[in-house]
Length: 272
Image (cartoon, rainbow, N blue to C red; front, side):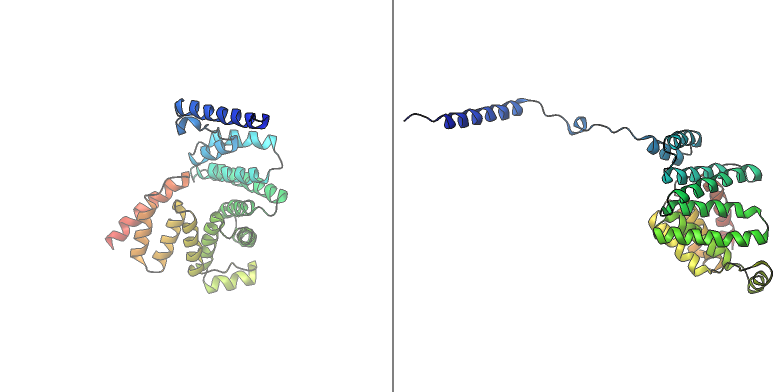
């Protein structure tokens, strides 16, 4: 019985497939590591890495270059705000004007970012950070006015992203500072200066604990929470928090100052 043309074609295909499999089995296997092609980080990723390594000059160069190419990128604006805050914090506290220059730039970048995209939580949180840092060197009346704007930006950031750890950290500080305003100062502020911020240690503690649960590396949150514990009479808890903080990586120049302050506090508490 003659074999059909279709049958011949099927046989040839089967033999060809078998040969391919045979050759493949004889070829040396390519190691998984070699098969993977290492991806080159994008410039923005390189800038982020440089920032966390505190190589601010490299971060500034990369972010600025990206911003020139993408002037309407809201993310780049809040990242530039974050960089300016980091640069300001790296300057000795005695150089007030030098620090303020960077904080003002941070606020400008953050405001532009918010204008470009009002739904970007990071823009609002870094605007609050820059405003908060500038508030340290202004008069009481102006400080109270700014507190209202800071709270608005923090509320907006957390409405857009309830897990924004930067906004939570700043909110904790806001409540902690507000808690220290006595009833007399609050009454005086309402009468002569306008509305005084309201807050308490419980709200501050809640914000800091949530921030730590989201990112456990940030030294600032442990330090601020430890101060609340000290003010609330919880000495042992404060000691445990500060000891935990000393094991965390330094990610900003201001962390070094906080570490010094915590070491001094630990010495003081150990003598009590």
